[in-house]
Length: 380
Image (cartoon, rainbow, N blue to C red):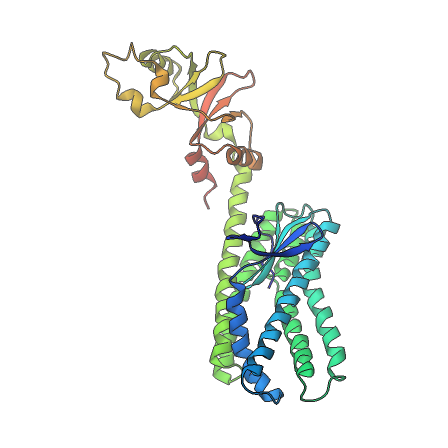
């Protein structure tokens, strides 16, 4: 199952986050996470009864054949994700990593597709690759002898890839069909984030349908409880991932509306030699709630900690420098008025700190922006 666009994985031969590096598809690294071995064991055990029914093999040979089938599924998932990566490169949004894991895999991107049709193309090639694998395997099934391991593996490969293709084509995030639905709604509405919310809710419908089908399959005897258990896990995963897609989209909708001017606290600036008393008087006179201390070159260097300043005894306020009760600003923790949306969020992410000095058009300090105020604004 493709899990859609994800953040770029860290590189490394045995990175905790990325897993075992298997190679590359062009410039895109491929990683196998250790969690895949869990699904390999599960598939080996679940497929073993089928092997016994189809092939005259006993003992360890049954589990060896089952494990080979698990490897074939891994290869199928790899082809699926490689198709995403190749299509992404062809449409101008190169992938950063292919990751194979417990739930199949995903292709990671730094940025989403900039246009609806590109997103649709990247999404649709995944299930199409599985259809191609299923069709190819099916062509060789009749040529293999009855009761042979080859016939069993070819038939299982054709069936499993067809199931993966159909399931991934279902219209709900994080499935590929959800990406297609998102692209279509995006094209119609002109709003990518609104489309993501819609496709995320559709994913929740798909998740509920998966859970209902799992229960129905057990009651009718279509699936054994062990098989249905995996369907339940998939349904739960889909529900969580779809919910995350909705939350992220809503967060970005709010982030697009954030404007530094709306959230800043009015501030005054004082020179580096200003005292606590002088800084507080300047703030009171200007009706400001924050004080920014400038360095000897007139640049913002620190923001006065209001609690620390209030704790200075009145008798010493004329002596203590404002800089001694101020929090130093990291390099780059200065924002410009008018900064908004994703540009503002990116600026905060580039220089993470609690507070930022805000400059007006004339490069004079006009306010202080608190990261917590931004976080509260964009929270769903």
